[in-house]
Length: 239
Length: 241
Image (cartoon, chains in turn blue, red):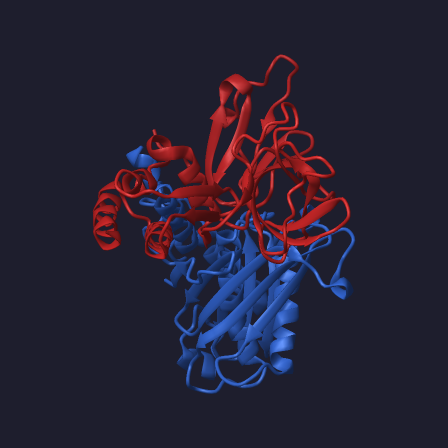
């Protein structure tokens, strides 16, 4: 279960940290703010994503990740509500595994954490959203076994890694894969991932009988968001 | 009964909707979106509130950037002056709000206040539509009276979250913040609260002004309960005197 804090930054409109078993990401959101003339879009908000690596300066790798994250966020944010405005998302990698992952694997592996952190920060910043989404990392080992939320050891020896994100209605909003796999394997991966994402936002009330095996994971996203609302509304109880 | 917490994108079931009024319409407030023909979904995280008499519903939403809406009282900072209006900042990095040179109590071409860049005004939002400039004014245009609005002289401002500013404006009973009333019993100061998350404090001494500002900011960040507030107020009064 990932560790989440919200409103970590004081001066950003919205912020969150998301720590999975592999990566720790700090996300900050500012928006809607004034956009630079060259980026201005006449009918929708422009979404700028900045990814800062754990050490050093951004490289084409970060630019590539930014383009993926921006396109996913564009489908989640109600961009048409803020034409000619900018929504700025900054993602700072705080922690990553010390073992170097192969090129390609490392990019796919970090994507779910980046997206989850960005989404939580958007919610914290009160940006109007189309839906709730969560992303999950899935690896397939040499024997064809599907592992969700793999450890770094499993990632190093796996055949393929897949980063998938689903929204509240169970629609696929992101699919990034790398490695050797065929369509059959991918379908198995998608099934596991959609179960995970569904479980992340599952209702916390009637889960006792549903969640007996605990195979599909805990409703971490709903729990985190509900806690946030309760903390923000605590003062109402006193008045 | 506790109201359910809704995630962004949740469709609102018909049983939660209030009865439409005589003309068969519902009024949607912030945080909700209507998709024709009759789907209503949430756009932010929060709890649903309804007002059956006005057949209105809205989402009690959390913080985020201040979005101007008509009749909000705000503290604006003058950025620059042009022939017929001042351009003011309500929140950083957003387009300027316009304040007419004559939108002050008793202002005429000859007797209008001369404001420099950086000056503060307490004003009311009078226009905040989609795709048009935000306009603010320092008088009630129906009566021509200032009603407490106008330039703020002296003092200093402190930033808090817009949600906390709203609580402060609700007062001690409804908002659950007793800091200002508590300190006010012992110390003399002036205060203005802007819905855009700006608080202006003025008192005779720097120590008191900064003390009050810090107290309010700490309460916003710490989410103090009433007991914690009372304790902090006692300590602050001791420090100030």
